[in-house]
Length: 46
Image: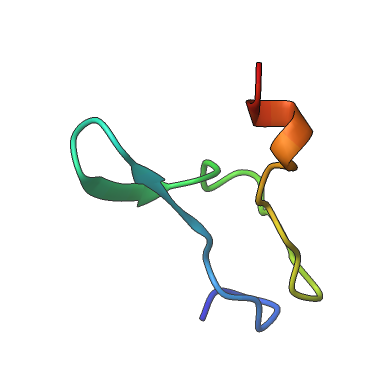
């Protein structure tokens, strides 16, 4: 784990099918609790 005890966060690249850092090493994204990133049905329906 990096300094501070927080895990690194990775983003999945759907085009190339590989994992990359979601933020650069100068900044950190800290998530303290689980969150739901699913879109609501009305956001995806025409």
